[in-house]
Amino acid sequence: MPAIRTQKFAGDGAPSVPAVFTRVTRGEERLSLGHHLRTQIEGSGPPLILIHGIGARRATFGGLVAGLKDRFTCISYDLRGHGESPAPTARFGLDDLVDDLEALRVRLGIARAHVAGHTLGGMIGPAHARRHPGGVMSPGLWSTAAFRTRDDGAKVRAVVAAMRAQGVGPVLDTLTARWFTDAFCTARPTVIAWRKRQVMETPAEVFLNVFDIDAETEVGRWLHRIAAPAQVLTGDMDGGCNPRLNRQIAAAMPDAELVIPDGLKHAIVIGATDAVLPQVRRFLPDPAR
Image (tube, rainbow, N blue to C red; front, side, top):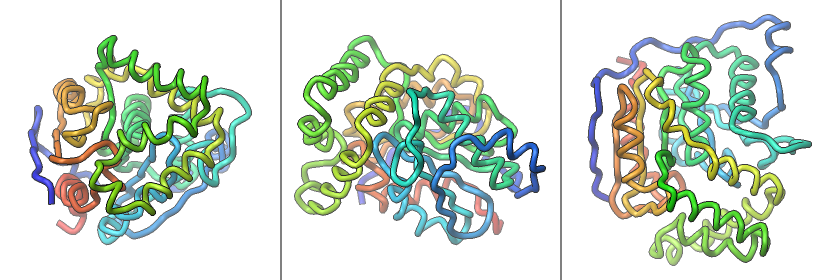
């Protein structure tokens, strides 16, 4: 297992208030439903909502769910335009993805939940906590970016420009090389092919739209407002959501833990469940205690 570096920022308490499911009135549900997202629910215990990233699927979290469903009700869903969720009819932004998450929370009758996301999902979760602080017990920001320099931003925008000019397919090998280590690519070619299929089966306009959101959104401006205990986690070899950025993310939040597993690139929840799962189980409070 890769070595782990963990650092605690600010307070050291874990959320102790249990999440509960509540009934919502039909009127509240009708106002908040938004897009009908394909959702998967497994396990029992306090709700844990898992949000995947760019061009991915709810299945991204299969390994984590298998290791968490003994303690938590694990709720994963396909973002709009991804997997089995409906495609949008127009461009959308981060606020729309937050609306989708809130619609899901209300539809399921969840009063409070742990909310964790990978890459773009790691932006959606804290943005939701900012807007609906009472609904989030703890956000997880996994392989997420903020505080990008001008050069950092230019590199991301260059990738998006290349995909617009050449198509997504020709750039896909470049992306997977950033997501997975060479060793993982050699050892698990079927997983690499599966991840590429996810991207290619995502409508190009949706894939580029969510990449634009990632490239253009700066969550660092308001992370200091997220008071709930947070876990910030990224691989030490992640080039786009690198440790430098994640140290700034954790330092900006009032109560954040920073975890940096060694030897991992971007796709930590697919490529390194054995390294990530123990850290998530340790951070999230055991409801049996």
